[in-house]
Amino acid sequence: GQQVMQIPQYQHVQEGEDFTTYCNSSTTLSNIQWYKQRPGGHPVFLIQLVKSGEVKKQKRLTFQFGEAKKNSSLHITATQTTDVGTYFCAAHYGFNKFYFGSGTKLNVKP
Amino acid sequence: EAGVAQSPRYKIIEKRQSVAFWCNPISGHATLYWYQQILGQGPKLLIQFQNNGVVDDSQLPKDRFSAERLKGVDSTLKIQPAKLEDSAVYLCASSLVPTTGLINEQYFGPGTRLTVT
Image (cartoon, rainbow over all chains, first blue to last red):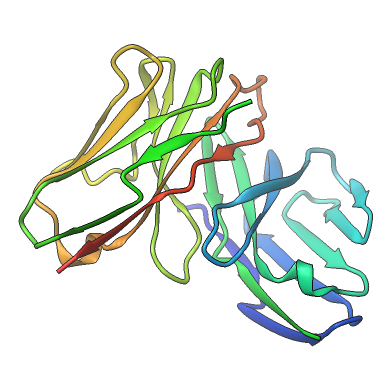
């Protein structure tokens, strides 16, 4: 079935370093969402990407949707300890079919 | 604006027992989702309602799991009988009715942490 691969599984960075997580699908996506889940918390919506090649920015976060709409990335510039958590993509294949990736757990050392 | 409410927050049961979880979505959100999140994994969609109708329940283990949303507002998810592998956090989320071809931002509740012993 349709699955979305998310890498890496874990990332440990020093505060101030950059961080990137990737989601890859073997089939074309309708759109993709990104969520953040703090330790012990619930997923919180960050952004939705719809158009091929779309790039959106939120302060230090940059989200990209691939030209073929099969992959997406989230990049954080100059991480802070408040960025700690697990970042999930949620891939939408249309017809109400969507799947969350396995997540990338980010740890930021002060 | 009140968020998505879930209860109970924690539940410990023995295998083969039954358990039920309750969710009250954000007012005005016609779409309601139940997810299972096993430790270290992403949320897995179990069932999606739009108003009181089921949109997708393809990943719901129907031999033991059931869900209802009788009046199109709050919802109940039941497991009967529970197995050890059902230990997980059960998340409820709600959203506005999706625009054609898209899905809307989902608002998640705090979840119910289920431990089956």
